[in-house]
Image (cartoon, rainbow, N blue to C red; front, side, top):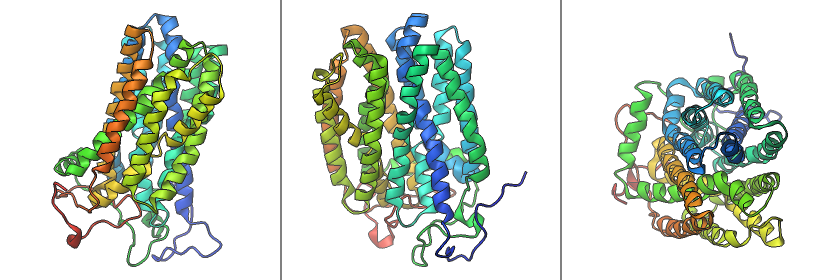
Amino acid sequence: MSVPDIAPTVPAGGSTGPARLHPAWIVAAITFVTILGAGAFRSVPGVLMDPLHKNFGWSHATIGAAMSINLTLFGLMSPFAAALMDRFGIRPVVCSALLLVSAGSGLTIFMTQSWQLLLFWGGFVGVGTGSMSMAFVATVSTRWFVQRRGLVTGVLTAANATGQLIFLPLVATVTKHSGWRTAALVVAVVALTVVPLVFFFLRNHPHDLGLRAYGATDDDPGPPPSARVGGSAAAAVNALFAAARTRVFWLLAGSFAICGASTNGLIGTHFIPAAQDHGMPATTAAGLLALVGVFDIAGTVASGWLTDRYDPRLLLVVYYLGRGLSLMALPSLLSPNTSPSTWVFILFYGLDWVATVPPTVALCRRHFGATAPIVFGWVFAAHQLGAALAASGAGMIRDRNGSYDLAFYCAAALCAIAVGLSAAVGSQRAVSTEPAGSAQVGAAGGEEPATGKDRVSQHD
């Protein structure tokens, strides 16, 4: 079946005329919708934790283990998904991921044993959503944009929170009135409905349409199409080995691991049951978590705008400091009813939820040049490993202490460590050693890759 072009072929200069919308914005819109769905699918487990506990008698630690597997695979798939997109194209990878999410969510309605939860929601949904995660954002912003890369990265990252905004209250309401199985089926159906949109309208590279990336010039034409040679797994692993020889990689990976622990792993998975421990209804708690998503949209878009203009290291220091202070105050703010102090937490924590992504992507492209999307995929894998440890660890703390307070205090302390790690990232540019045959996917942001005169020690 042939797929129609979304715009006619134009000269390599990339101009579509003053009245035409550059196809990059259409691709960005489709990507936004897809990541919105992935964020929605990822947010559902927090709503289902108590219903599964009551239905099957599984402990919070057992259910948290499934969420831990989900979060781990969500991160570990990111660099491999970036390499697969470079090898086979964006469209087949994303379509396959959506089908896997649909299968994993739909099959949960038949489960009777806890290992099935680990396989379906942990394995299938984790791999599927991981293939549509932040490396997907880096790949699209890299290939389709030269100008506005930071802003586009922020907007696409905010789609994750928008998914929470739309889905969390809906899933909580469906679960309350129709049961968790109906909610799981809703996720399966929604994932399927996105597949045709991706298949017919998501293009792999502007050169497929005879275009340059948005804002491309002769001095900065954007990345060339991938040669699509070599193995995707080898490209991902080679990029990791090269990046791991640099000090900056470990600083970014360490700080981003703390980012994951203090967001997806802790708040994303355990905020609703923690609020219920204080007498708050699940629907109210879900609404508050969705409201975090509202403010996160503004915070992440603003972060993308700021990243185009200011030192991303300074932005990360501010973000982690603010998040740590918010988490330190949270145990004293939870109660059966919302209060002005609760709204203050939602505001500040929401603005900070994933505002860390645009400056982290910018630092990856500054230090790793052409392999930045895959390297960022590995940094994001660290993010999800941190989230996975927090998801299971917070569940254990809750089972042992009957409260999540200690988990919130530990996360606040980790944020203080992230402040130091972010401040320690070098300001000089570096270039990772790129092994022969590795994927060439282009820089993932507005700054140009470092050239020979910019090279510094691999231990920068």
